[in-house]
Amino acid sequence: MLLRPQVQVRPGDDLDLAERLHTEAHARCFIANSLNFQVECVPTTGL
Image (cartoon, rainbow, N blue to C red; front, side, top):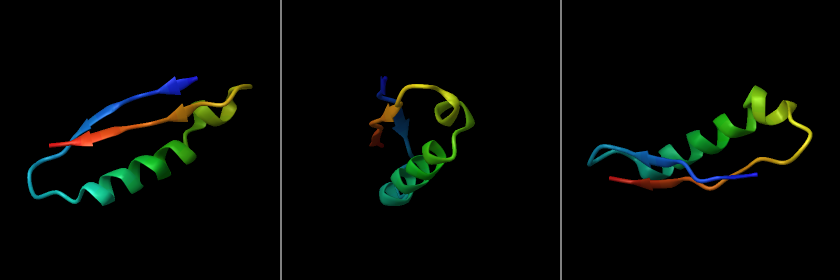
């Protein structure tokens, strides 16, 4: 399953940090980790 969440951050926020936090949250996601198929997340981060 491929998820494409759209993440908006405020001007001046760290886009790299937002992407790293999203990656870490997905890696620790109970629901994604309990499914019997792979869940891939490709976020779009923008202002």
